[in-house]
Structures are given as structure tokens and as C-alpha cells.
Length: 283
Image (cartoon, rainbow, N blue to C red):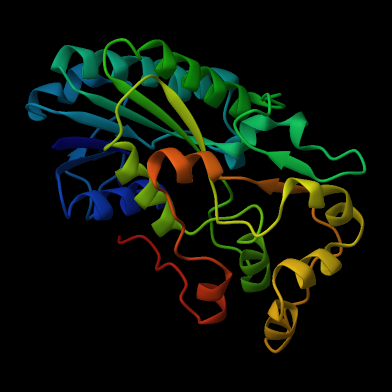
């Protein structure tokens, strides 16, 4: 397939381009130049660069304003970038006869629903989003736009969990319940391009060893559950000086993506222990 990937210079977009390039003809689009960028341009201004694009079979839309931009960018900027630009790219996909549109979304849009009330929150596709800021709201609005195009092509929204550089102990523990490696995110996008059927939304996160009936205990005594579900892990982490969390407030469940996409995260806590950290995006 010939695939347009937006945000190709970014953390996620660059990883998606690298993964897809092994099997597809990929065109990277971004506001800034980069080794993965074929066209420098704004997603919103399709008319300015459309003539350079040629035929496309799919669009993977990773470009967005993100949570760190809240407060420094206006609500209008968020709406323009995360909603209006998505609408224009959907129009481009339809006009081009593309068969797929994949939106990189976020688990952040669950918002207030992620706030625990004495029990860890089990987060899957059945949990109703409760956006708490303009970022959450515009990503949710973008998802709904994408779903509305489902009669014209295969559309998929991927709600990815925490995936950015942090202190090593945090990233390692997060892989158990609320984090994911960038390489696994890229793999999920590749799998989404292989699916067909009605509009679908998936939680994309590292594989969790926990179960829904662990939620009450995870909120008050996480170590006990970790010992039971992951024998020896606390000791292995301790050898690096990485202490377990006292409490876990949420667990992301990617079970639906496993069943329907065949998505199996490969870079979990064992990768972190082995020093297999995701390399930074190429510049």
C-alpha cells in the first residue's frame, strides 16, 4: 500500500514510518523536516501539498497537539489541529479512494473516568470517556469524526497509553499496567492497516499480568498482587534499585486488540530489565 503518515518527525510518527516502510510505500508528512519526512506541510492545509502526494491507499494520522501543550496553546489551536485537520484528512482519504484511515488516539481521553475511588480503574473499550481538558476533548471529537467515515473505508482509532521518555524505574513499572514501548505502538498501527470491517477503537498498552478482580487490592497493596502475578519480579527490579509502587490507580487492558488485531506487545518489563530501551526518533 501507499500510506501517508502524518506527524512523521514526531515520537510516534517516526516509529510508525520506520515500521511501515518494511512493507509499504510510505510518505511522511510533518510541519518540520526530518529523516522520515517526505513532505513538509500542515495537515490542515491539504490543498497546499496535495499535488505532491499522488495516489494513496491509506492514511495514518499521528500528528496532534498533546497534553503538554494545554495552557500554552489556545483551545482554538487544539480544535484546528486535532479536529479540523482530521476532518480534512478524512476528506482527502475519501477523495483519493483510500481503503484505510488509522487515528492515533490516547487513553488520556478517559479523563475523569481514570480517577480511582478506593479501587483501581480497569480501563478498556467499555469504559466511557470523560474528557477533562481541551486535549482530551479534541482527541475524543477526532475519534468520533473518524468513526463517522466508517461507511467509506476501514477506520480505526488506537488509544495508546503512556509512551514517552521518563526515569527508568517509572517506565519499567508502567509497562505492567499503564505504559507501552514505541515499537509496540508502531506494530499496532501496522496491524490496524490489515483489518477490515466496521469502525473500531482499541486500547493499546503493554501486556498486563493483572486481572479485573485484582483492582481493589492493587489500590491498597500493589506489591502483594505483583508478587502473586509476577513471581520474582520485585526481587529482579530491586537489584536495579527499582522499588514497586505502593498503589496502582489504573490498569489498561489491551485484550480486545489482542483478540481482533492479533496485537501482542513485545517490549514489556523484561525488555526494560535487559536494558532494551526504545531508541530515540531519528533526526
